[in-house]
Image (cartoon, rainbow, N blue to C red; front, side):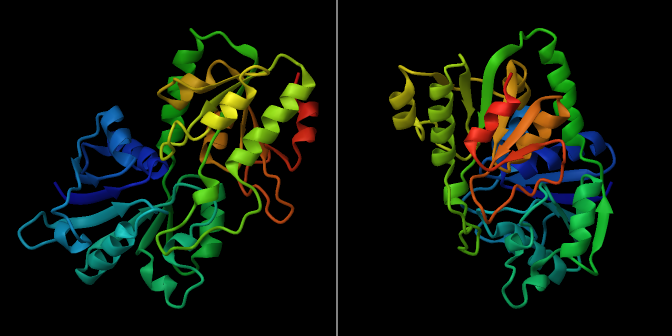
Length: 314
């Protein structure tokens, strides 16, 4: 059986790649090396992996003479570490096919150094995309590259899990699930910071202030991003604790948090798409006149001002 090296760091990409491995585990020998938030994903799903440790100091260490003769390398793009790009370079130098499974619909060129000169040389031999929206944008971003449509099996995992949990979970018509994401600290592995005029804390505070003034009995549950500290919003929670029912989610999985919520609000996180797939009212709040939510799903409600939210609340 052919050996395929798999590398993941970020949680979103790890969800998609691990879903693919679970479905195709009997076809290839997947050698999974992961670290960072991806470890928790692989562990939760029971996908065998070996964590990267201090002995692995470079991508070349994974391809050293005497290790597995790899047919291909599958990785996910990462904002936080250049290791995946280094692995692509090392694999291409050794004649190993390199594949990156795109885990989102925006900003992927920046993860390979765009618009720096020579960024195209850091891209893999082939990109995998999970749906027709990603396929269309990938062909535009990476002309001349092999773009392969590989259905996003993570969507199926989420819908299946949600269906089971929703049967035994009561829907709270006043519950809003807020999907946090580290927008204010989004720096890619090249040191580039996104040019934004808002922060996730500012978005959440504007939501809390609006709901407090509304006096509609709404409740807010915050789902933290896997890379965020759960104490991040402590000051904000203390500020609104007497005026609004607001708390950090205790749920482990997205379906657990989706099930009781009547509304799901975020910025441009992939989890908004997953909420949509589960039949939730998904709302993107992006208070930036120069930047839109680029998630290519027209069913997602996209607003710029928190005051617009009222027309979508029952």
